Image (cartoon, rainbow, N blue to C red; front, side, top):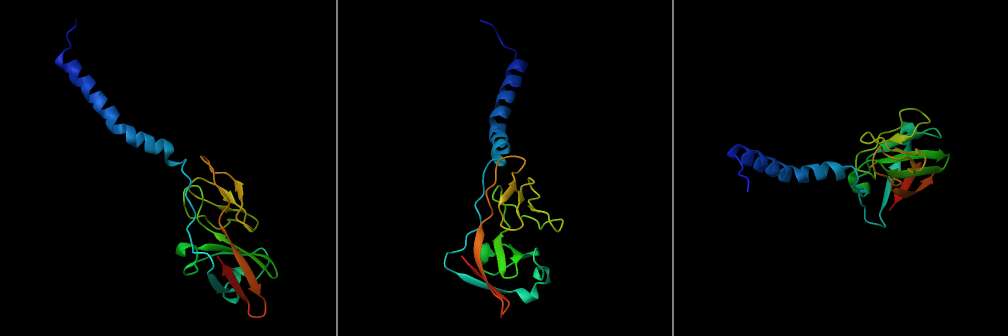
Length: 158
């Protein structure tokens, strides 16, 4: 039977304790970028209105803006994109990968980009056009939108 010096015993004991204490931190780092986040929720059957005449970014087809609509999307901003004269798309600005806020496109024909892990989403419907650097994302939550050209009001339904 071999005898262990006090110094060897203390070194092994502190190494073991350090390993045990750091395991949860290491596990959190490894899995942190792999967990999908759900979109903010809004009860179904609610309607919200937006006066398009007050949003100059939407004056032309292809325009897109980021707009907070009280009560919609858990009060997180939504993208409103003008697809045609009377057609608009409304979708969440919360990335489905990690819940980060997605940015407006940097160029007139560009995609909406999540700054956290570089996922990209279509400016016209919120669909994934490029997966994040790690993990995966799903399409941004889309809301039903109808436009009344006479009143210039967009009605968004959940």
